[in-house]
Image (cartoon, rainbow, N blue to C red; front, side):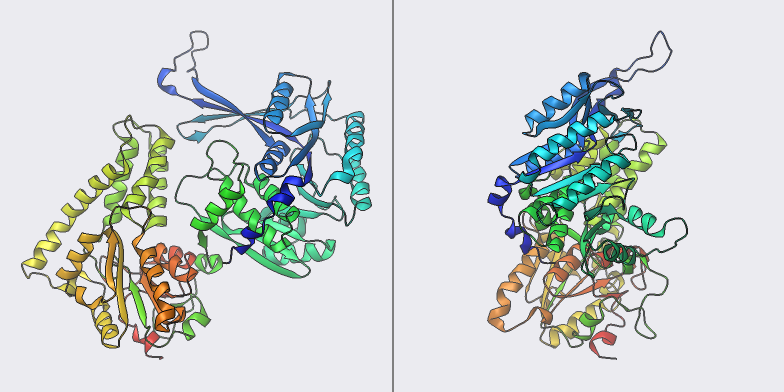
Length: 628
């Protein structure tokens, strides 16, 4: 995926631009609780909730406005309604702190509470919230005053965002009719973007941003049954003769314009995420990109990165900067082929084989032995470390809980978080996995002492080596041979490639000395003429990235194209690196316990990481390289 559009942001144009946000303005009031000092109320007999700290943040249209400011938009005017109450004063102060103009916020003295959401965080989980403002009734006088203020500044704006979230908020049918008049009168002069939960189709000649559920629900109405969001979005765009952006959750976003469509890829995360406010970050980032001069398709890609950056902020709405978006893009674990990953009933396999073809073109162009091949080690060649996931899971769960008591529900959530972390990070350095464990420990707050990543790694490595001792001892005593502890056909395939002149590299997330020692023990270290690379405890230098970057630098001088390189592995890290650099990505669905056959649990993660072909082991590898 090309990300060159990020370099096309015109920060000077953003700084000189004026953007308006019209809609439902809210305040998010977070309460962070600590049950350590809670007590039973004498009066009620109920347990009290002790608040350790509380914080206020802008929500709704206010959140959109704040993100625009963070992205570098010079002037942001916020239009909406607040009450004549203490919460209204907090709203005014929050806007002032963030450089957002409040001249368009109308104070309605009756029938209106400033919208405030009280959000209680306990043990790393948000409890049911308490909302103020759900019984508001906006007056025509308030709407008229707001529209008058809007008219006075209308000619200044490059872009106007309508952010409507509430049924009992600013927006009514009458108000929309008035806005539609202004939309029509500024056609070609102002970009109007609309994010509405309840009134899709009511705004005319605007660019809608909606989520997948909203798009399908509106398109289908009461009688339809269309399940393809691509078809629904294309039809709505054609009907309205306007571009459409549809967010797809973890699968990214869809942009449709003039009969053409493009997907912004979803992104996987290894750390905890909080999706509150992601939609606000999306539309604000899209607006900033359009104001900056990017095409609509590139603007949706940028918006996808903005939303992705925002979810990394826990327990409050995130406000991504351009720097945050670039950082996410640089480190992104993009989700490729999501439809294929989720469809397992009839995979496309070669006849009479378990070899599954994911990318037909990539497969057909790689039917000869590669000039360069990179192999992951554990689970791809060796099974000496078989069962490492269970060892790591136990270490991580213990680190999160320590000696604290955790009920069954919390323990299940902790275990699920740990398993997800391990699944997404298979193949990366152990030290990084342990760095990513620490936010989970902090999220639950059960551990009295949080150790360093190095300490957690040492605990894991010690336990893993204990579990490996029996196999290693049996090998050295001659009770097992190398084929007993390697994936079926792996050693023969390495020898075949070596004899065919392929330059072989071995890259592993395990410690370098351990990888070299195990490769020598199993008798194939000498075949890796390109070198053996393992972790040296430096999180900034991933061995698999190092190998691939090393090869890329050598390619031109040796007359080798990326198509002449292949990567074999059972983890998403090496598949993603291969895909993003144009190498042939062969995912290994290895069943490490029996050393042959398909392990379906690995399939989705390898497909999503960009694998071109999936093999269970190397017993049928000649079906790929023999051309049959």
